[in-house]
Picture 1 (cartoon, rainbow, N blue to C red):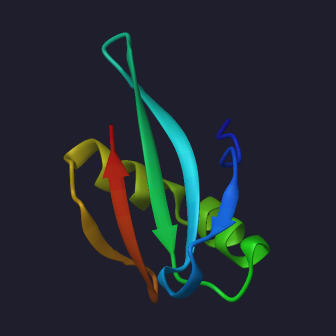
Picture 2 (picture 1 turned 60 degrees about the vertical axis):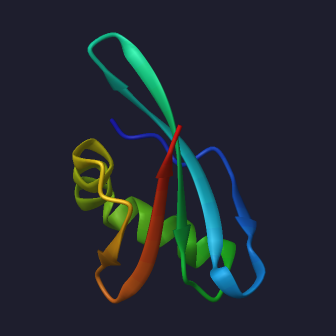
Picture 3 (picture 1 turned 180 degrees about the vertical axis):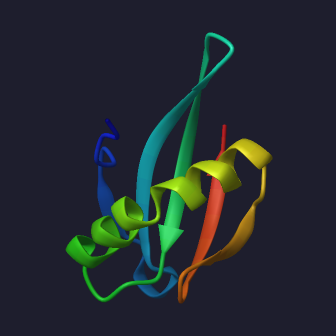
Length: 77
């Protein structure tokens, strides 16, 4: 089962930043995702509804893209 992102915080005009982790080969990677949305709740909803695509983007190392109609920016560390 997928967990909700740890936090959503406003990044002013850049949208809401959500933080999550991915595990791969026994290693965890910290990720952040910026979603353009009208509220933190909407950003979290977009995150949950599009988790499969977001996870794929993160695993493929894609740094920018679109999820549905929402522009996103993905950063991994």
